[in-house]
Length: 148
Length: 148
Length: 148
Length: 148
Image (cartoon, rainbow over the protein chains, first blue to last red):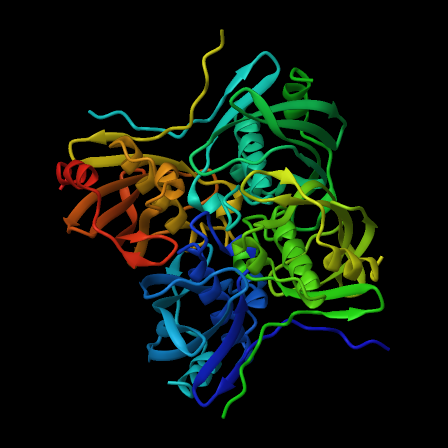
């Protein structure tokens, strides 16, 4: 039977998760470059793949009784160079801080061996419907800790 | 005290709802024109304002016990000319068919008096969590009927 | 040294190009499902990878003297079932018509072996700045013809 | 004849530009709230309307010989509370720094009188094709200075 073709989910090398993104028309704007907000989409894809790689299922948690998940509390982005249609960008994600109910990730966007964008994101664990902070589940906390 | 500045929600003229859209960078692509999928976003904004204008609150319904709403079942778009950064487009929305659990809307995108895109959308009323068809609430049905 | 991790660009099986997409938060809406316009983004990613696989570089053509490329002229989408966060969708793309200055592609979105969305897209070859129809370059035409 | 219905372009009150945004389905995600990257879209819409209000035509500049425009160099966003479908958000934009080739804007997102998101954006004036810094045109500089 034909095997299923799956999207690239990235790879963990040491403590860094590396996720590849191709730039399509949807990502660009009339200036010919990737629209600045779209790097935050790439970043979220990479974070999603990273926490899925360590065994956390966001959809399950969203639909469960607990209804917990992560929300971005703070985000800081440095734009150093622009990317264009058909470029391949590697998103390098690392955990730089870990608390009981939050964590900080650094995400470096690399094209042709050169950093073009750098993002720091602070994520808070929340009960999603209420927006109330929640402690990170112990098993997730322990897993993330290994990448600190 | 200062009055609140509100977004344009469009106007109903006869049986047509007219909703204005400005083209921003986010809407364009590296070809310099509005990305084709984004007309479907404009169309949904216009439909949302139209059904809000006739007294239907989508968010309320989404969060209520019933959890009903509309999902697009079929969509057909003709792209006749392109729009560019800073253009103003008027979306003309009309109900063209109405059934007990579905309706069809025609949406004409006009720039400088000329149609550039035309979209037909078939919407089905659903219980959202299950994706199961639902009869349109009677009060909504009666209201929409007036615009047929 | 470490090899570069690349995004999935899909595979050609017979005359069908198969491209995998993971559903991320950006793709979903408050109804919990993939927003209807976003399937057109997935479709364009798949078409881009397909024509790149047969040797056509869209960016190069966009930046060249000729400045030619493809624009969507008509698009028809059937939404049969919805996709949710973390789903993997396979986009099956086939050329169904080929003319001197245009072509039609059928794109079937499959999840767990079941078609959830089906899209037909008519693309026209254009001089991009002017929006004027252009004959498809002979080498591209010949290549596409092999997949008809 | 029928007057044209135009999108809200916001208002300048003192030195602050206030731009209203309605939250539509496209802006939300499966968590039921506005997706974090989309605030950057709202922010760019507001900045575009602000600089258009003071007489700068981005499209014209993009298409002119000079080919100059603004690119985001740095962006910092604080997310304090979330917005939901159908919310109206007011984006309050102020110039906080002005240099010969760059400026900083603060953008406060207010819903029901309460700040939910705060963004600082550093914009650089560029020759767009080359990504090379450019001095801001004198007339624009003088106009922006009045809002400092």
